[in-house]
Image 1 (cartoon, rainbow, N blue to C red):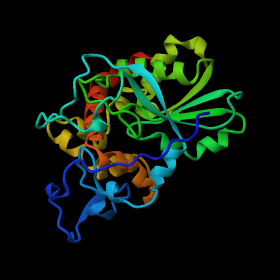
Image 2 (cartoon, rainbow, N blue to C red):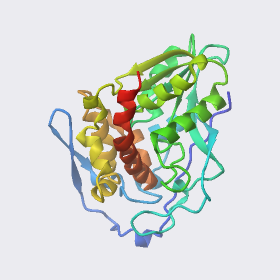
Image 3 (tube, one colour):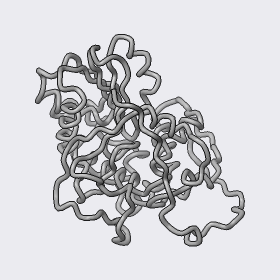
Image 4 (cartoon, rainbow, N blue to C red):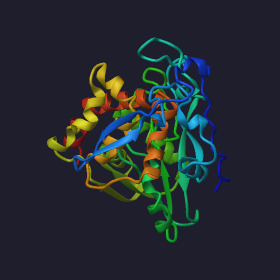
Length: 309
């Protein structure tokens, strides 16, 4: 296994005087909906929510929970970019986006966390939409005694590359299936078992249908298997709305906290919520990718869910 990576440092791209922040910000609170309809007021100073780089984490001192998680993983190169590899521009103003929104190479970088012995059977743990590999943080050590579990961030999520639509990756289910094949070839050249959650299940089912000889087991957790399930809930579908979806996807509380907690009865600890929020706080690329993914799912998911066994 490769040695752990040093946690990345995020720097504010714009001069501080252009961030339009007062020297001593006044208290500001934002309301976030919760599954039990209770209100949680969160300090609005956690991040600007629409920064091409920077945000509150750029000024944080000392390691965060997200830094600790990143240090446990490694970056894996898999799946080539398509197109002419021009610099990505934001869909609002046509301005060239920051480094976090650009593809750094001809092949995408995926964040992977691996535990256990390489001699053990491989189990690939695939997070749901719109989550991260961090959701498997407690499963990895449990499986590591008898298996070689690997969790990864999908393109557009967590620490993996977040290419902008029309600049190397368009976030369709077919593209995701092809990208998954490339990643599996890179991290698990032999047979493996796959566990996948939620709305990314149709991608894995399509891969499994085409590579049955590659799989030992396939486990689907809460997959969309009917027409009713194939329709995205409102907390996710809102990100595909024209214009409003692009705005909503830049709100870290709406894109992260609300989207993750609205589908179940469980509450996240604040230290865990900060890990899921971080991509939306440090770069606008996460929000633009989320907007593209929901649009792609809205077009393709129903067909995949009803046509695959």
